[in-house]
Length: 67
Image (tube, rainbow, N blue to C red; front, side, top):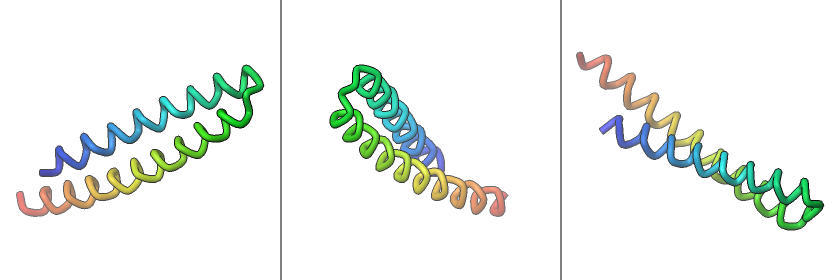
């Protein structure tokens, strides 16, 4: 079960990284509106990644306590 949480956290980290790269590319081309949209999306993915990471951490702690 904890592996599922870790996997979901990793997926959101990857989505956030992709959105950050897209934002940087658009900002570099002076397409600030699209860059801003990607930055907002990156922040949303980062927040979800943090939530999933915290959940995975809690679950791994409970699993370790049971061992």
